[in-house]
Length: 305
Image (cartoon, one colour):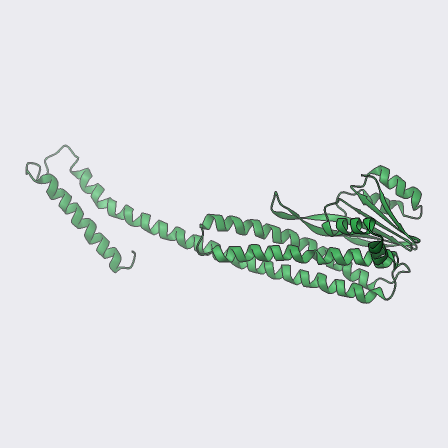
C-alpha cells in the first residue's frame, strides 16, 4: 500500500500500512535525520514497546490489542510512531480501527484536519495515542461479557462445554493482560518525557492517558482472578460429578458381584441343590432379588446412595 500523506499548514502526517523496504527507503529520503536503527525497527515483525529519544524526534513503539474472531483470542498489533516538530509518522498493519478511522476522517474533511492537526504534531500524536488507549475498554467489556456468560452457565450447562469456554476466555485474558502490562510503562514514560517535540502542557493530558492505561490493567488483572476462580469452581464441579458417576458404577459392580457368583456356581456341571426341583429357576432368581434388595437397603443406610 502506498505511503499516504496529509498536509496541513506546515504539519505533515505520514501514514504507512504494511510497511515495505521501499517505504523505508522513501522515509530515509524524506526524513534523513531518522536513525537507521529506527528505520530498521519499522520493518521488524514484532518489536517490543519502547521509546527512543533523539535530538529531532521521538521514536515510539506500542503494542495494542486486536481481536481475532477466527481463533477467538486477542492478538497484539504493533504501531510505530515517529514524532518530529512538524511531522508525525504512523506505521501499522491496518487492523487498528481507531487509527484507521481517524486518518480517514482527517483525510476527507478540512474541518477534521483543522481539529486534529491544527495544533501541530505533538497534539496529533497525543490524540492518536489517547484514542488507541480508549479502544482498550470495548475489548475489556467483551471480556466481561464472556465472563458473565460463563458465570450464568456454570451450574446449568454441560461441564465439558463450560470448561472449554473457560479455557478459551482464560487464554484471551492472558494474552490481553500481557499486551496491557507492556503498554502501561510506555505511557508512563511518555508522561515523564521532557523533549522539545512534546509541549509541557501535554504532560497533564498524557497523565490522563496513563490513568486510563492503569485502569485497564487493573480491570484485566481482576478478570484474570475471576476466570481463575471460575476455572477452579468448574474443575471442582466436574470432579464432583465424576465422583457421583464412579459411586453409581461402583454400587452396580458390587450388586452384580454376588449375582455373578451364584450364576457361576449354578453354571457348573455338578450336582447342586434344587437341580431337580421344578421351581429351581424361580427360586434362584428370588434369592438373587432378595440379595440385591438387602444390599441396596444397606447402601442407603450407610448413605452411599
